[in-house]
Image 1 (tube, one colour):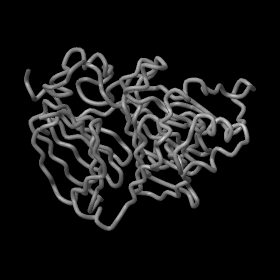
Image 2: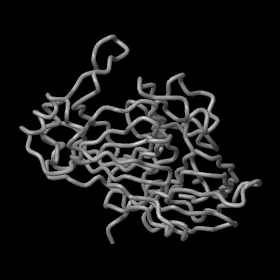
Image 3: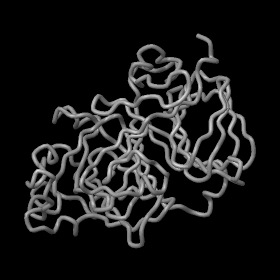
Length: 329
């Protein structure tokens, strides 16, 4: 396969209009096609309920799942086990707080017929007082959990974490959590859409009825001994480039600043995802020179021999998040 046919790919966002969303994705990233209430932008998605389509270059209009069936090793890497994208990348705008919820992990997913969903949030913008709930303060039993839920005191048992731009949180499957109002996040997660709500603040859905809860499933997947919030606080050490933000077997996230033209060869782990957090870039690869604006997400195929990154014309520095999937060696 000719490596020149592979180039940096960006996708048409798949927007989700949940009732807790806002307008910041449109306002901050100058997007014109968002719904009036935009809760999520699925940036790179291989989900049947919202598959990504290429927005640029010769493959414009092609669906990601279609490309993976035809070129899985060239896009994902030679060690790819199946032609399915392993991650789901989202922007989340919480104008109101989300439900208290939990996702299954690789073990408990089979108990509820769901898909494992471990995720990580990187805080992009936060209003004063923005917060999240994540993890129990102390180990719990199912009985105490149900009692606290009935008494409307469940949040007393959870870490409430104030957040600011640059912070991150790791949310493994089994950890009870909720994103509070005021948070604009980049979410990196397993390719899954399994969410079990345990409390939704008595919110009424668009149909005029309370939104469904999933307590039976949640009780089967909650990790009762999970007492960590998962907070990764931005520190002065993060000014050193590159800076490893977090790594687990499912994904690795780095912060990088691009101040001058920079050239990368193929990544040993396969594909790369770039999110342009500040500034803009020119991406050169596969015979293409492509402007990459702030807030855009890019898939760099494993089969690209080289990638050149240059700060945008008016940017002295552009900052990116680089996401890869560690491969066993």
